[in-house]
Image 1 (cartoon, rainbow, N blue to C red):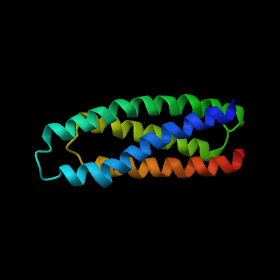
Image 2 (cartoon, rainbow, N blue to C red; image 1 turned 45 degrees about the vertical axis):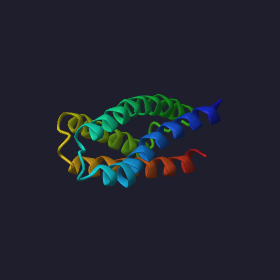
Image 3 (cartoon, helix red, strand yellow; image 1 turned 90 degrees about the vertical axis):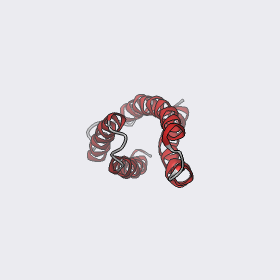
Image 4 (cartoon, one colour; image 1 turned 180 degrees about the vertical axis):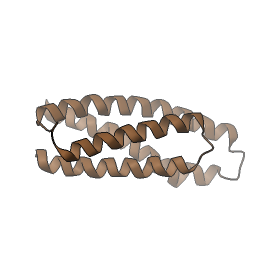
Length: 126
């Protein structure tokens, strides 16, 4: 059962970070300079809904895994949770101010740091 919960956690993370990579590498360059208004908003809106689901699933499965592995006092988990909260706030701000493109980069860098800490935690829990 725990392998399944870990798999769901990783799948949710892959959707979120992989989606960001896809947006950066393919969607934005293709739509940039064109009539990017509605098509870009439609893609961002759809990804936003998926992001809400993936973050919710990641938090639920991550909490279950942290409890199972007794990691709640681990400093790396604390740092990861802090970054998750920060990225969450940045996403909310970005939803209100989508023209602040610096937020895109900050969210992406924060997401990559979360993945790094998750890999590090996996080696501790392993």
